[in-house]
Amino acid sequence: MDNGMKVILHRDDTTPLVTVNLLYQVGSRNERADRTGFAHLFEHLMFGGTKRFPDYDLEVDAMGGESNAFTNNDYTNYYLTIPAQHLEQALTLEADRMRGEWDIADNHWNVLDVQQKVVTEEYNQRYMNQPYGDVWMLLRPLCYKTHPYRWCTIGADIKHVQEATLDDVRNFFNQYYKPNNAILAIAGNIDEQAAFAMVERLFGDIRPDNEKPTTALPKEQEQTEARRLEVERDVPNNAIYKAWRMCDHQSADYYVYDMISDILSNGHSSRMYQHLVQEQQLFTEINAYITGELDEGLFVVSGRLCDNTTFEQAELAIDEEIERLQHELVSAHEVEKVANKYENTFVYSQYKAADRALGLCFYEMLGDIDLVNTEPEIYRKVTPEQVMRVAQQLTHPRSSTLIIRKK
View 1 (cartoon, rainbow, N blue to C red):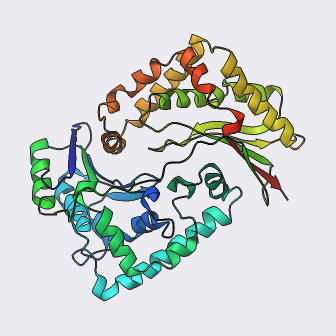
View 2 (cartoon, rainbow, N blue to C red):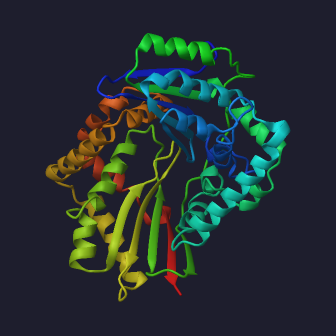
View 3 (cartoon, rainbow, N blue to C red):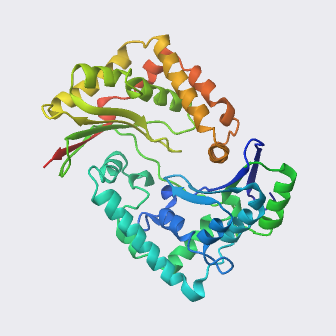
C-alpha cells in the first residue's frame, strides 16, 4: 500500500471463517539492553482497549470470534478469526489499534499498571516457579554476549517491565507499530477485491511518521572456546543442554541444520532415541532442535538424565552421536524419511486458514512468500554430503553447555 503496509489475500471457499493476521516486525531483538521485555509487554497492552473500542475482547466476542497474539525474538503477531460476514468489523478493530488511540486520559495508566503486574506474574509462574523454567534465561546469555538474542522475550530483568513509564510505552509504539513495519494477511472465505477495498479504506489513511524502522544489531563475535555453566535447581531429574550457534534463517544451511536435528531426535526411530534412551538407557528423554531466529540462531541438544547416569556419560554420549554424523554419511533413506516427516508436518500445519495466514506473513517477512508452497522441496534436496559438512560445524570449541543438577 502507499503507506508501506504489505497486504496478502488468500481465498478459501471451504470455510465459513476468515482470519485476519497482522505481523509487526518487532521482537525482543529490537529492544535496548536497559529496556528489555517491551515487545512482550506491548503485546499485552494492545488488548487494553482504545477510545473507540474500550473493550477489545468484548468486540471479538460479539462477532463470535477468537483472538490471540504472541511475541518472539523477531516479531509480534496478532490474529483474529471470525465468521466471514464480520470481516469489516475485524479490520476496523485492527486499524483502530494501529492508530494507537488509547484511552490514555482516562485509564491507560491503570491499564499499564495492570499489564505490568500480569507480565510479572507470568515471569514468576513460567520462569521462576516451574521446573527448568529458567533454562533459557541461563542458556541464552551463555551463548550470546553482544546480540539481543542474549535475553528472553520476557526480558533480561523483570524490573525493566516493572519500571516502564507511559512515555516508554508511547515511544515504543511510535517507533515500531506503523503500517510500513506491518504485514497483514487475510485468509478464508473472502472476495479478494472487496477485502482489499476494505483494507484501503480502513488502513490507507494511517501514515508512518518516518521510514521503515531499522535496528542496528551488534554482530556476535565467533565463539572460539567452549563455555560451561552449572547450577542447582529443584528439578525432578538432572538435565544437560548443549548449544551451538548456527547460521541465520535465510542461509541455505538453515535447512540442513534442521534436517540434522530431526535425524537425531524426531520420533522413536531417530538416532538419539534409539541409542541413548532405548539401548543405553542414559536419558529419560532427549531432543535436538533449532531455535529458528532470523539472525544466527542456536542448534540445541537437551536431555534429562536417568538417575544412574553421570553428566560425563551424558555429554560423551551426545558428542559421540554428533561425531558419527561428522564422519559417516547418513543413508539416503534416512534423509528421505526425515524429509517425508517434515512434509507431513508442513502440510498438516497448513490445514487451517489461520495457520496459512500466519505462514504467509512469516514467509513474506523472510523475503520469499513462495516458500509457503516450496519449502518442503528444499528439504528434499538436502544431501547426505551436506549433512556431514554442516554437522562438522558443531565443534567442541563452539559449544555452550548448561548443566542443571537437582538439589
